[in-house]
Length: 236
Image (cartoon, rainbow, N blue to C red; front, side):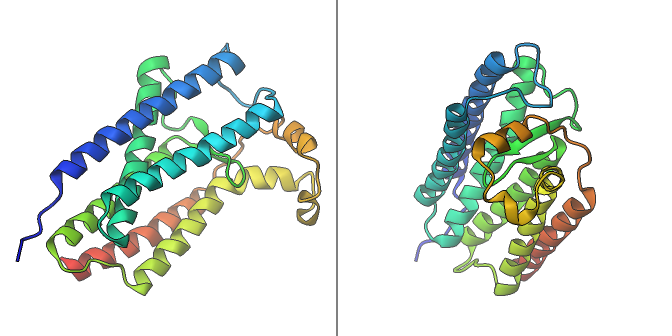
């Protein structure tokens, strides 16, 4: 019977792949900012053609598919595939900001606001928040890969999964809270689904981030870290 060891080669190449993806993401954003924000990125957002907005949403979807794909290729089972996806995503996200800082000296600080995602709605938050989330993802991913490479099974329990899911939902709410509150100041929730896309895009151009929901963010991190702590304690 062969002894399972930590997959150092896979770890190295996924790290390289994710860093390269981070640079690619940085390059795309620099090109877009040169076109839309020649004087530097700032809120409110600059007008963007609906066709270009669609391309941006599809690009984000394609990025997620690529990161999921690398996890599926690298993993030997469901839990390790999930871990490698988390790890690749986190490294990609962190180095996206690293390269932006190196190339255009942005963000000004870790508290600078940024647009994080556009799926299924606009996510915004200070730069430090996705970095914290990415570090949390790296911690969970490395623990899973380590235990999966040294034990017969390293699956998460139902309680651990439940905490991760709840924490992730609260996390998403914290990122979408401010923008959603802005939209709901102009439309009732039941009317949002019937508002023409062009009208919604015009409203989005008026949005300036006001207050990040740190309470929800901290609660989400606590829940997720509790799940990770339970997982580590059970497998150590």
